[in-house]
Image 1 (tube, rainbow, N blue to C red):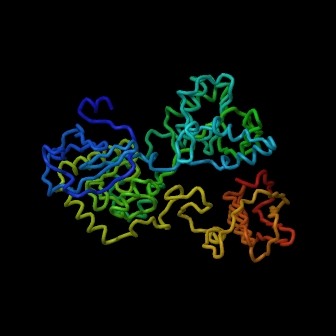
Image 2 (image 1 turned 90 degrees about the vertical axis):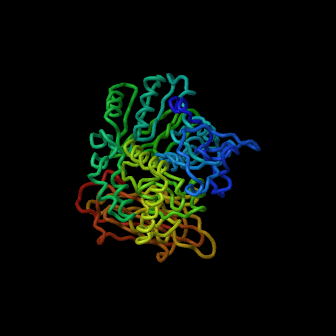
Image 3 (image 1 turned 180 degrees about the vertical axis):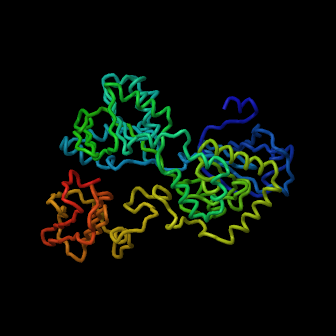
Length: 528
């Protein structure tokens, strides 16, 4: 940043809140505070101040698109000739919030009946590596404000490089009494790599075939190549060093089922490949990563209002040559926003360089960029997608807008089960309350495994839907005002779906599911 400021670049604090297309007359002329010579205006209140940016070649007004009026969070208004949205996918997204966070009130009530201390503890002793809208300022993790942890125990939830570096700082820099790292992955050699994506994507080897794909196929390819979490060799070395320390413990292939505040500490229950005792800690740090979600961002919504873009999943289809937004040649994107144009390397260093080359050529030679844009638009018209809407057939897990306040299904490439179709079908006569089934038991009887579910309300067999997959189970029981739902996405072992069955004891509000196993081996757990 210092090097750029020495070259004349002005750095502004604040986030971009809105974009408006202006008329060409707003550009003005030389000597009137206009944009002649490529210098955007900074407008604060009634004043207009020319910003000193890197000099761009002057162009005639006829060659330039309409200027853009940009409004920042601090009230600053900028009239700009070009706009580049450079994001790696972390800002234009939503944090992954583990399910145990929603169970804190119930778990705390069970540990300390009648106590409300968990609310204060959640604000002061649960911190997040990523920010989100509903977050308190005190909940954003700032290690600069954490002075000493010599008498405290920290539980870190996450399995990426951020979680590993947090563990290192907690142990070595802050001197934590004990640090637990809980991750769903194995964190083994398969996740260690020199590059974030396969080397073939860093050149033309794979990209030629990528550009020949339809947008939906590109999306699937992108998710396949970037879906698995990776850690660098350096991060793996740090983790291996931490494992040798007596005050560090790593729980692989494990997730937090519940966490409750007992008035003095957090009691954390773990679910993994073996039975684990609960752990106690003073602080919980969540570093579970971010899911890309550009369509929920105000800036992208503003662009969609100006010029709707065709979408594949949650990713816009940009101009291949200039990475510009459709019909807005002076708005260009890089990072995850340009994933369908740059491939799996879009949000990494190689993708940033490729995007910078395309964007700089477009700015320096607008006539060639306009010709390329016209050719790309003509090609796109031959295989159009729906404009301004993310096709449900193209959405991937973790992509696209998702209202956290409603219990709706996340987008997925997998076909919806009968339970999911009924759960998310439009309801006439008022919305039913959706209740997650928490009360159930199971018993292993050699070749059969029985699951006993207690709904707690009278239910008829016609209102019960059970989907038994090869290694998954879903149950939906409907009453006049509620929908009781149980989902086990992965059973301990595969079962024989055709020989499995279920019974409904309506007056007792009970459902018994008999799963036929493939062998007589004892199941140690119900969930895999």
